[in-house]
Image 1 (cartoon, one colour):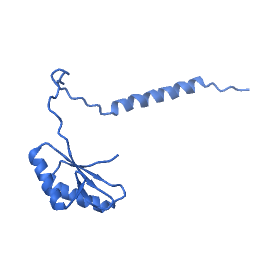
Image 2 (cartoon, one colour):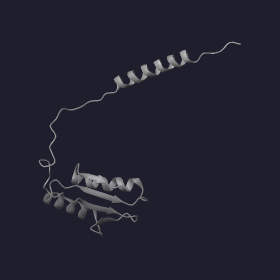
Image 3 (cartoon, helix red, strand yellow):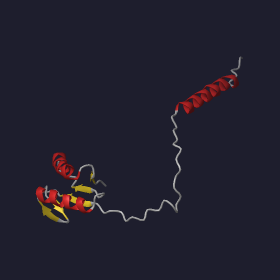
Image 4 (cartoon, rainbow, N blue to C red):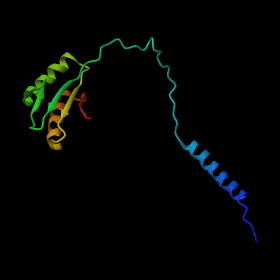
Length: 124
């Protein structure tokens, strides 16, 4: 009765596996940037972080500033005042998850008109 010798077949499979591992390692684009990173003593940021302005949008589609309802005009004025006092500040919108997407986008558009690129949407 003839026997099947599996050792040569395992050698071939291991050779093919090794080839694919080496090829896949050479095809990855690992890029490194040569920069001098600061140490802990020289990189300490002594500035106090600026608190973002929080704008709320509740389920009744009311805009909330500091917990009280506000109009879009009051919102725009409050954001302009905040950004004038804090040039590096940002505005965060906390909208109720049950609101239609269109309502959230409208308020975000108002925020973006006034706040520019420093507007974000809060999520959990």
